[in-house]
Amino acid sequence: MNNELEQFLQLAKESGIQDSEVYHVQSQSRPIFFEGNRLKQLESSQSEGTALRLWRERCPGLAVAYGKVAPRTLVDKAIAITELNDPQIIELAPARRSIHPDTGKSLPIEDLIDLGRDAIARIRDFYPETICSAEIECETETTTLINSQGLYCQYTETSLSYSVGVELVRGEDFLGIYDGEYSKDRLDSDRVIEDILQRLNWAQTHAPAVTGKVPVLFTANAATLLWDTVMMALNGKQVLEKSSPWSDRKGERVISPLLTMSQQPSIEPYSCPFDDEGTATQNLNLITQGRLDNFYCDRFVGRELGLGTTGNGFRPSLGSYPTPSLVNVIFEPGNGSLKDLITQLDNGIIVDQILGSGADISGDFSINVDLGYRVTNGEVVGRVKDTAIAGNVYNVLKEIVALGNDRSWNGSCYTPSVIVEGLSVVG
Image (cartoon, rainbow, N blue to C red):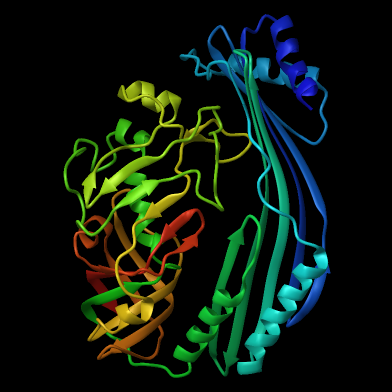
């Protein structure tokens, strides 16, 4: 494969292009789908994509192809696109060879099917009226990046993902609960099933709506409503554009001293050895006890800010230019399980699933609660319906009451549950 990718660089050089890079992703997946409480289908798919980025007279051109492609065709397309762009400083990683050992482990298809059947059976043993679905997938992906400076980076990872959806219809009332897991080597469905059963139990009765400003407990499933805005505010691109409210507050306390967050790219299962520009990823302290330590940058943004890249240049898609993005965001835990946090609420709600997108960089949000529960005197008394919450993330995160020790992965964000004050709840 390396020789094939080198052809792109060689043809670009023969066309008078001195600066170029090739980003290549190849994957093979085996998804399994369950619907209506039974196995629906098995699939096997392969995909391959190649992105060629080059500069002619410092004008960039990016061309993408999926599947097998003639190198000459892709080079010509990329060169043609340079006619549409203005000159810029060339951002290429220096020569480095970084080939990482394969990570992860595949599981037999029979084991994955048994996992899905077992999960559905265990849920329906307690709630036979539920309609369950599941998707289980084993995927192997290889990422390769080379450039005309002599860079050659590559890693291959095998991942296992597992998600379960439970639906319960009673008259005009619809309840949907969703949870899942991601791993490099094993799937343990016990936590997922236990969490779903707990939520079904809490939802057996309806509780009257609560209104006004009351404490809100965000489970790990819903806490990213808050963290997504924090990560935007730490994005060097937002700082460069002066749209982050924290642009000039480095070294200052910006949120509650209970909160410490960092990037730790070597932690499984979302480990990532280098970014999409070929820079090695690194541990990065972002916020320590509420104090803003660092922003994260790609090569362009880091140069413009005078900070240098932090190894966070990632492509949102194969056909996109690198832009700052975090990997493996880790929040330090607090004390107590989810049940311990619930006992701290005299009168409040739990938010477990939300509808719609969260806040933008301004921090303002108003969203509907898809799955939430009323808490009275430290006990869950039932599910709340037709409830919305509103507030400003930056203000709310100054009012953190407690963090749990119940961290779990929500995407590549390892977060505990959190209790906050200052949110307006409307029933």
